Image (cartoon, rainbow, N blue to C red):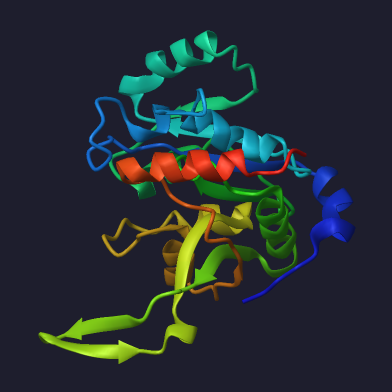
Length: 242
């Protein structure tokens, strides 16, 4: 696990074009909601808008590429009008799987050897500027940075119907953003799709590149179930103003 102070490197990040691909493919099934969870209101603003603002309000200020199922493009544009949300972003049609959605987003990049791109879950609206800036800075130096936190719980693995204890200190829970040099990520996504590709780190690892972890936060939650909205609202109410 790598903890970085990104302050001294921010000027280099600002001087180049960086991107963030926000992947919004959820359907809201587990949230028990009529609309997908990325559109649910969180303190009066759709979750997805909080997520985009987390990046644009960071010092990195990447260009935003929003990947959304085509069926929800019009609805998103209505929400932007309703909430007077004018933060610039490119709207891209999602694919059959997360892999294909990210690939569609990558097709929009004008990348060179120095371009960095973060891929982020639309329903992680509480990601801090520190996490975002650290992710870009570390990826700039080491080609990739995958946000993660150590497990707080005891872990057991079921093997052939027998549970085996694992060392908790060696178990990390993977989050987003996951940030890469853009040319690396584009090349990794030229691989054929595999059901074992659960995130961008697994795609890049399959391509043959070692994955580097950077420190996340247990508050960087992914909104999945109805109670997660209440937790997120509580955390937002306690968040210090920038």
